Amino acid sequence: MDAVRDFLLEMLQKGRVKGHFLGLLNILIGRRISRADGTVLSTGVTWRALANLLKQCHYDVELVRELGLEPDTIGQRDRQRFWYAVIAKADVASEEASRQGDKLATVLQKDGYVIGPAPGTK
Image (cartoon, rainbow, N blue to C red):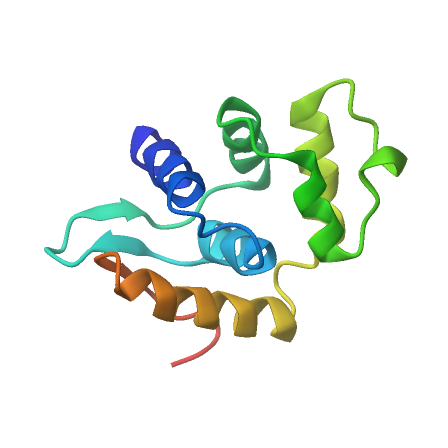
């Protein structure tokens, strides 16, 4: 799980999150993430684990606006529950999420990451 946390922090540092939040959720939940040298970072994480990681990495709640959600309408008191609710409402398995994940995967190739295909695709 440390590798996924480090990946999330790197995405923040490199500015890869803004404009790609839905794609990032899609990749983290349903795809294999590895480095170009073959080191596997993740084969997918659960919603609960991802919610906890987003909380630990202090992701900005304003990112949910990219998903068409208003952060004020989602209880922010407990950040893990907040992020879990966001993931549940994001429809991370939709075709749009897969397209966004594919777009982000192309960007991440330049950073030395290999992102697997969305589940159900070849």
